[in-house]
Amino acid sequence: MAIRVMLVDDQVLLRTGFRMVLAAQPDMEVVAEAGDGVEALEVLRGTAVDVVLMDVRMPKLDGVETTRRICMDENPPKVLILTTFDLDEYAFSGLKAGASGFMLKDVPPGELLGAIRAVHSGDAVVAPSTTRRLLDRFAPMLPSSGKEPQLAELGRLTEREREVMILVAHGLSNGEIAARLVLSEATVKTHVGRILTKLNLRDRVQVVVLAYETGLVRAGGGAA
Image (cartoon, rainbow, N blue to C red):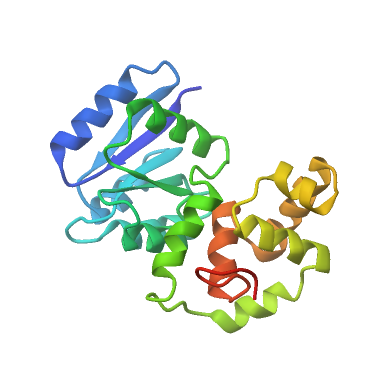
């Protein structure tokens, strides 16, 4: 079955370009488009979508708030934030709102297609190391909310799970974590899965965001 994609951007020309690229793929189909967040939410009520390509700067309702509302639904589509500038603070906010990743609008077509497939398969398309670079810059500027409940949630982790979470937040892959902790990669994968379940997180990117929000990992530095 083809991946059902929705394009959300106030620039018609940009949507047209993305639609042409996606239409040439046998495993993708553009099933919906919207020019702002309000329209996107309305369309999603009656359209089955797997992945949303979401612009951040739009009239009426921006992409960050739209993403937050989408991700509040049960079994929501995956959201891939599209931003004009690298290390954009909107991308940071989009990750906090529940997006599975972010990419630049001028990304090569092959990378965009790979990102859509990765998001659809359940992966986060932004490498944790890239997310950390983003957070190093913007985390001190953007206050988080609900920090106390989040700190309480971290208390549910075992010592080993906490250790694995810190290494995930530093951008290490499962294989790198396994080598660092002298564990099998399968064991590390199990630990990561338990972390996601216990903390009610969707993917590794959200693990990194939470690690920063709670102070488990400091911007520009190591573990707390």
